[in-house]
View 1 (tube, helix red, strand yellow):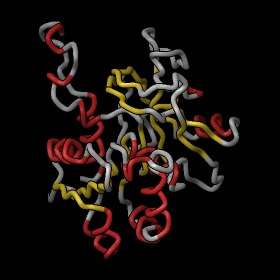
View 2 (tube, rainbow, N blue to C red; view 1 turned 180 degrees about the vertical axis):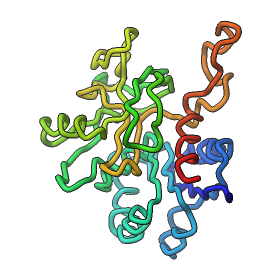
View 3 (cartoon, rainbow, N blue to C red; view 1 turned 45 degrees about the vertical axis):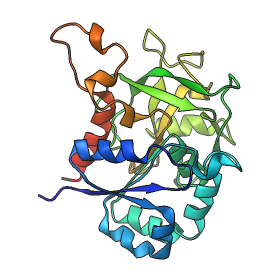
Length: 258
């Protein structure tokens, strides 16, 4: 069976596209990296792909807010093409700045409720770069398929996920759309810093739409696809599981399309 085809969509200021493309290749996909201007010229070419990824970085310099200009371009010129892509079963992944883009384009949280959301400045008021531990909730998204804890690095200044209606968070949790939560050393979801690096209510680290096929997360899975990427790799017990939490996310998505 042919390998799924992935398009990694970059814009001026994107700086994680090469690592993200490499991660998809390691997971078994055929990958092409496109500048958004190329897709804007002919949006029908999106039909060639099964997965669309918006990687991390500072698209358009985050001049009007993280991901806002990129989101505007997606939500206007490419809105019909993205809707068709999603309806035919395509997967959309947004990482860090890509998550910000998906939220500000209205693709997340998604669904009929049209709950308005945003990602705003970290509670600490600083750019946070650290490893975090998360608890997945499998069941809805093809990107998250097991409940084993996940460790990944974060690197963002605007990662605090907020809803216009705070009560809507309960509905998202009930629907299974909150698929990753920051947890403390005991494994409990937390808003406490630094385990929760941005102060997001409900410890939301990753979110999907009601279909599960649109998935965004603030941590960077492309930065943990080899055992040596982990800061404690030399101190692991002999014979311990050397699976890479980031690579698992890419592999799960690929497996769902085969």
